[in-house]
Image (cartoon, rainbow, N blue to C red; front, top):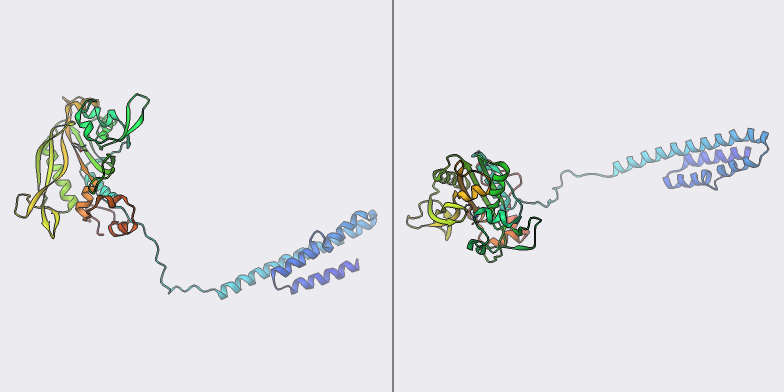
Length: 366
Ligand code: PHE
């Protein structure tokens, strides 16, 4: 027993003297490890006669407890010392410049869609959406283009090989007009919505990409007429281009889903070789630019959407969002919109903090 006591004193002294966590760990293994002297002493208990064991057991266990406590206390002390040494040696220089963080930017298409939502919300329009994978009933038939209608061929439609469960041909929507149908079916009338989104046509050159963006507008009520359409478009374009001198020219046109149909031109002036919207297109140095299609919703379309055309009437329009972005922010190649080139995005993108509000001017300050 005195031997154990001597060993214990030596171990406690060594623990008090240990200056690293590694040294402490070595001492722990030498005493309490599987083959450590405390563990070996505990193992001798089994072979002792009962009376001897009754005496020896509490002594050995007390030694184990004492060594364990000493190890724990020393470990805590060493850890605190280590942390203090670290805190004392490390410095953070707050006067150094912050590293340049990578910044994302808002794509002009998203920016323009946000601006449209803001402008039309102010006129009481809600934002509606529809699926990009459409069926030919919503994309064509219900818009007064039955299977034999020549306008179908003009849409360069991407079709899917399989029909849906109702036997309808599936396609990528060629315009946002099917959202007119979906919104009327879902909500009934009266209704006032815009529907921005992606559309697809098999077409590709400097001014056409196979995917582009449109925004649809639809107003149905009991006594809506062409005057409301003209006022709405004028108010929208003045707010969007942030100019009071936006002049519209309405030309008779044809769309199967509107009757009468109206193509809308906007007057522009050539400034430094660039077309800038504003002014009377007939004035010297000016011209007219075709901007959007619109008209009074065809009775047949209102009927297809499940409403009574003797009770409800209204107008619809559709305009290219990418086109609006190009005109407002001065890009001239549509394809660059969809290249994902970070240099282009850095140049033409907008700050996410620059939320369009009517009060602050709806346009972004790039
Ligand atoms: N859907 C037509 C197009 O894509 C635009 C349009 C919408 C015309 C609504 C009239 C009314 O060209």
